[in-house]
Length: 192
Image (cartoon, rainbow, N blue to C red; front, side, top):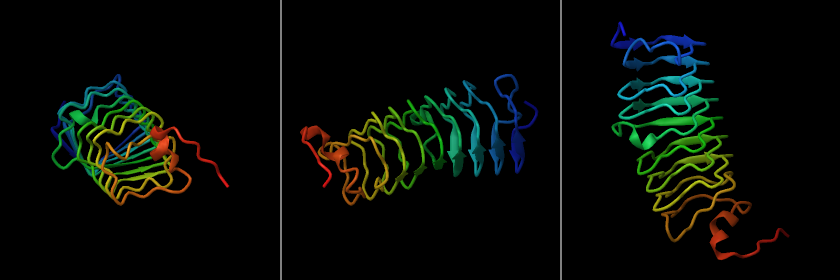
């Protein structure tokens, strides 16, 4: 590594499975169509960065700082966001695959998940106050002691949320997805 800090630079079509990142801290940078799969990003710092059409699956992100980060069209399977640096943790996800990832006990209020696949994602004890799950697949996602106050799940689908085990006060759901709140009662809901 030659530099410790890089600002306002665009990285395109780089395979980081065979190339090393140049620095440990990135501010205002854009990563386009880069492959980070299984890369050790532990202790890296990303501030105001954009990841577009990148593969970050199975990256190690111990103590990684993600501050105001936008992920678009990214493959991010099996990421343990609960191991990230908690200070200033802020990101949004659009058209991303986050299957088998973990947000265990993270404070990520107001996070936007738009058109994302969140299959088997662990949200146990996460603070998702005012988070948005727009058109997201939450099949087998785990919600246990999760704070979903004022969260918007009105277009989310395939979720199973126990209202007795999670804080859902003023969360938004639609008439079409209420079954995800009632599944534990083993009742039949019919459309008129």
